[in-house]
Image 1 (tube, rainbow, N blue to C red):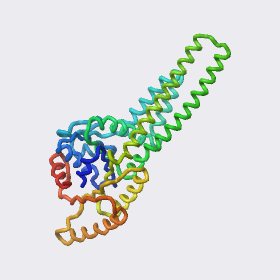
Image 2 (image 1 turned 90 degrees about the horizontal axis):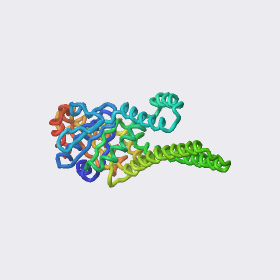
Image 3 (image 1 turned 180 degrees about the vertical axis):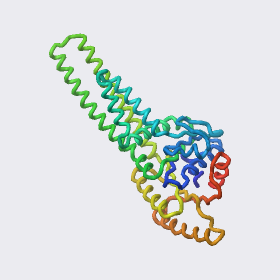
Image 4 (image 1 turned 60 degrees about the vertical axis):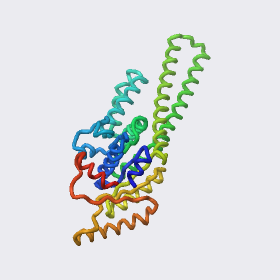
Length: 327
């Protein structure tokens, strides 16, 4: 079921409560497709850097080769914010007088810890990864942070598009006012060439600001359209057959549906075997009670169960063994 979905889509997001095995399941899905000959990019948006722990090697913010057909990268929130602020600061330095640069730097330093800064920066990186990755890979797999963070991240493209659209409209009003002032200057027979040169420079700055905002709007708009394209993108929720993960899954599904994002698979990971001692049978029966609620609340979402295994999944060899559990 899960692997069939991975064969049909170009982008898969994996989400769910922390500790349920999202990284293992998403990485196994990516590896399975790579083993079939597809070119796959596995991306972690989780600050915990779980991909590096899973593969027992360092994975940075640029794609590294894991095995034939499989590349991986981890989006570092701190590094992403630094890159984002550096780009914005550089653009503002070009647009504003030198006398204002210290004030700009001060403002950027304060903005670093502003609420939502990390999410906005990560979102831009996700948009960039999707834009380039769709051309370079057959499948992009996102291993996301725990549910609350992921839910906020998924609604951000719509919010950021609207916010940027508002900035563009404000910019256009400012540009029209600036043009009106320039026309007044011309009507007053201000023929000074230096002043004319300053006017041209101001027009270039206004154009530059508009270009930055338009590029940002396009980036968020494209990502929003990609996430909502059910032929291209799907979302998988990984959970354990326990009360809190089940309740969180139902809540996450509702938030994603409200954002126009389709959940096409639920993966119940670490399912207790039905056979064995009384403890295992009792545990399996208890899990079944929680899964009945899941069936009641989300009856139309296909579900796949992956049985609990005895050992931790660490390294490529262990992950290859886990892939067989998904088939």
